[in-house]
Length: 221
Image (cartoon, rainbow, N blue to C red; front, side, top):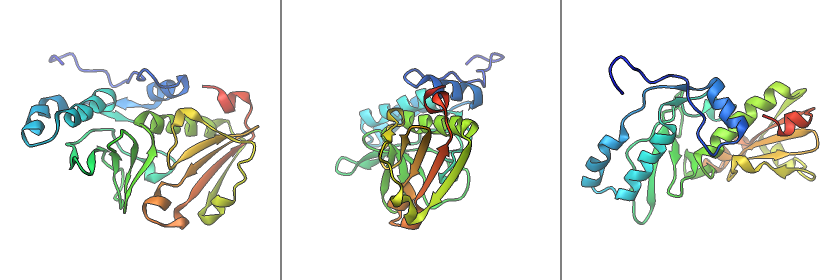
């Protein structure tokens, strides 16, 4: 970046996202000046971090670093700004790095796991989505469904396990692992299981039912 020629705060939706998610990032995101992780790469390697892990954190920063998105509907809003940190771990346990600071004081942080999954480090590592793309797709889908649904119902605790998902199919773009989205005939259901699994606390289960959706609400951008 040259002096007097600042990077635009308007982000460009990364390739590989759905059209809905790209539009969400570009319409509602803000790109802040990211940390220059690649300048630290050689320092990390000199301190024993594998080159592949340093590169993985740098690649995350290239794609997501500095991106601030609207709050998520669960997990107290998710990371304030997506930002990679120095990888931590071992060859035995695998290597992970933080995905960005929390918006509020919480009992866990947001982490990119050894296999690239986006998750939380509660009492145990809990992957939410198979990648950060999946997390962003989930944010975009929640924003989309909230605007177009006739009703939004929150279901908490063990009642979540009583939801009848017959006739529903998983929404593939969110790459659900512990969390997932399900699409039905005229509704979408978001299942947030991460805190319940990460803390062994069934009371933390939560589902959001977006009902009264038409074709655009179910599939559109």
